Length: 254
Image (cartoon, rainbow, N blue to C red; front, top):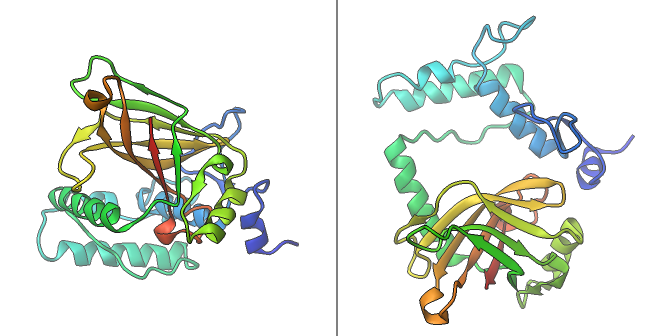
């Protein structure tokens, strides 16, 4: 019987059902591919299920959804943390919670901005590549990128000094082409000194979609045609622990 690590490293194995339940391209139920991804889905399922909702197991769940409508005061973060830890201890004891952070909507916006500034300012790209193709919304008042097609990662230039990690990521991703698709309109702001536009979306690697953020500048005026330069940050913590904070950063332009 293969170990959990061997299962996680084998791209042809599945661990369990993905949450929320959805169909894959073969019209089968989508599945998770490693134990970390399964744990994340199980945790989300537990916290978003209220007691009484699950048939044959009415005690399953947590009161997080109800607590979210409570008045915000100094005791609310403590209440939320207790509820999370209690639910996990009962239903998902294999998950070790190190910290529970509670943020209001205003704090989330501020925190995201601060995180983005620190993240892009201090991190370097692991790969760089010209985009093979990109699409945008013509009628938008700025370059609203909706799709970017990158070459497969084997054809991208690695960052000097990170050759070993680059080779590991190349083996993990294989010959799959990378396709970024936005799922909302771009935002303009002072994210960092360099990048002024943020576009959130997903990036398709093979048959799977991963959360991704595109930070870029519009160079259309200088180039006298539609052009951009930026970075794509891809969340890959569910399939590898080798990347810093689980993020693959690719510099790109077109």
